[in-house]
Amino acid sequence: MSTRNTIAIVGRPNVGKSTLFNRLVGQRQAIMDNQSGVTRDRHYGYGDWIGKNFTVIDTGGYVHGSDDIFEEEIRKQVKLAIEEADVVLFMVDADAGMHGLDEEFAAVLRRYQGQKPIYIVANKADTHARAHASGEFYALGLGEQAEVFPISSQSGAGTGELLDAVVAHFEEAGEEDPDSGIPKIAIVGRPNAGKSSFVNLLLGAERSIVTDIAGTTRDAIESKYAAFGNEFILVDTAGLRRKARVNEDVEFYSNLRAIRAMEAADVCIVMLDASRGIEAQDVSIIGLADRNRKGIVILVNKWDLIENKETNTARDFEAKILEKIKPIAYPPIVFISVLNRQRVHKAIETAIEVYQNKRKKIPTSQLNDTMLKEIEKYGPPAVKGKIVRIKYVTQLPTHNPVFAFFCNLPQYVTESYTRYLENRMREHFDFTGVPIGIVFRKK
Ligand code: GDP
Ligand code: GDP
Image (cartoon, rainbow, N blue to C red; front, side, top):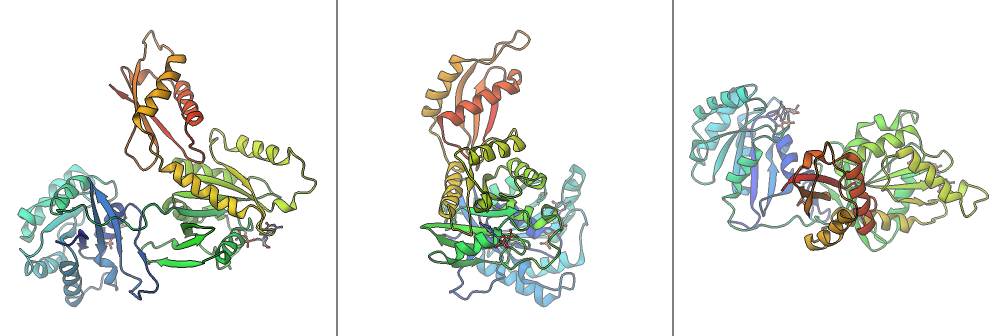
């Protein structure tokens, strides 16, 4: 078995292959090397499950012509999956029920039975009834131990059980995503804030574009850069580098692509125009980034336009921004001038620091040493005569910093005490730019 640990998803159009693909690769699409000359529409990405890394191929990406799919294409898709993958997922639609094309796929797949493990995945089994009804696909006479896995790619239900079964076939840990650890940065902001100018300046720095990412995501363009000694991936929003031709007044944030780019990124740079200050749409994208647990950096561009700057000018400006984005208080604010190339380096450095903060893992002993002292100093207030005792703190193995406080009565911890703990956490550990989660668990 290859160390690649490859999973291929096959099936007729619209069953949800790319939805499952996106769930498995966790938004991290594979990056293609321009030089290697490989085709750009290879739909593959990296994922991992209980300590096993794997590559996922969405073979549907090769078959064009949507519903007009012919036997030739089915054969091509299946052949590719069998050749490239260690495990094949044959996806059908539990909502639509059996379809003639499913039977055609099954007929082709049956020729390869025994060569590779094949699983039937009944997607869109969003409800119990649909999951139950997916039993009809046993009739396809395929599948590892003839099993049908009902899942919902949309909600993620059932995907854990499926992955448990799939990764059991992988003997080795597998190759890690070569781009894990490289921050993905999205730059958003109102028209004219200076986003394109900023990107163009970065492009001019040192090495420009290193690699472009495969056309897997339908909405965001991603490119890998090295600037000022740092590697990062820029998630472009529509018309960022090529100036948008459309009406500039179009509400920028109603543009789904900006939101998609933000969602695909680790860190969201929100660029403001110093001459306009922070506006309602900026506040809402910051709120959205916070809810999506993204790192956030606020850049105040065109600082050159502010005349008669005094020592307090930046501080007052900063206070106004923080007032508007309350209760979010953690984003760093950097004042720059793309025009004068002022603090552009600092801006990128800050974004990378925020990314590092987002990935930070605090050792449990250190966490307990500092936080239990703070809790001793000021314990949770009694609610309805109930005394909450926090015994132990640990960081959860999540992609964003989340801290679990184990206690006897988690339901009695107040919101203000949660805020107290978050503030102490931020005092002791640098989580600048990053939303952190505080949860209470029963001991
Ligand atoms: P593909 O052509 O096989 O790659 O299918 P897509 O991933 O593009 O999905 C086709 C449609 O099915 C999209 O509208 C999805 O939103 C929808 N879809 C995907 N997974 C689910 C699911 O688990 N439940 C439901 N209800 N819809 C889904
Ligand atoms: P985008 O719509 O956010 O991509 O904004 P652009 O990069 O196209 O910039 C809009 C306008 O602001 C252009 O005329 C730029 O030359 C100008 N601009 C960009 N950065 C600065 C800056 O730091 N200072 C000043 N004074 N103008 C700037």
